[in-house]
Image (cartoon, rainbow, N blue to C red; front, side, top):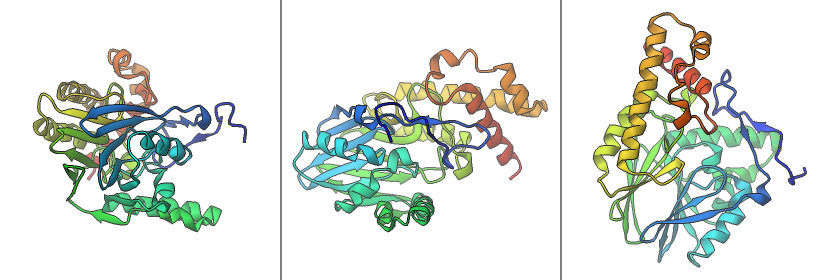
Amino acid sequence: MNFQRLIVAVINLAIFAPASQAQVVLPDWDTVEIKTQKVRTDLYMLEGFGGNIGVLIGNEGIILVDDQYAPLTGKIQSALAKLSDKPVKFILNTHWHPDHTGGNENLGRSGAVIISHDKTRNYLVDFYAERSAKKNDIEAMAGIPVLTFNDTTTIHAGGQTIRAFHVNPAHTDGDIVIHFVEADVLHTGDTYFNGFYPFIDVQHGGSIDGMITLYDQLIKLAGPDTKIIPGHGDIATREDMRSYQMMLRTVRTRVATAIKAGISVEDLIKAEPLKDLDPIFGGNLIKAPVLLEMVYADLQKHSQE
């Protein structure tokens, strides 16, 4: 395949609702740059193509939160080598989507211990099993977490208390949030996109109500100086998250009102009810029609439960 251009093929994995047709266009991997940003003390954020990676540098080794797509592992390792000569010891997967877990296979084969919520592991088992059946790629199973938990787990390393905790269904039903206690840093995974509309994986338990409620929990946990590494977007503050929560409440109210009035999702999209929010939040992958479709399906689903 010629990687001197954008790949025209798109990934329409099960992470996207079929009707919404949200599409991720994969880049020429050779052109992707891994940018390193210091967050606090020995904590860093790596940006490339995919979810933001949290990095804790410790004497015992490196701890990662997520690891982006597999073709970027070499570049990610090169960026890490500039911070430490230690290997990656642990990887915490915030959820199962490939833009956060694609590097699991490569790093798992290199000896990293992969940790996730129980449900995230189940989703990855299904994902890798289907891929292996098609490609007869047994080694792909190295990307599956080997340590899982249901509620909370804590790692003591790098001078930090690293508390990972499961949250109510938000982006998916297997989301975890990572709290670096002493550093006063949160990594939210995709439960929070800073600066643009969220993706709510309704097919895998995601819920706008869960997302809105989660922010109450995180805002209470955060202080005025807390730094928040979102799943996508720039490092954020508690006030950024508060503003984002207000946007989601507005979106939910408008969609719920349309459903109550018997307006179809097609007519709702045509009415452009998020036109005032689009200039602020509509500049990334998830556009207003996709968000409306997800929230509509989400509220309909939960109203029938």
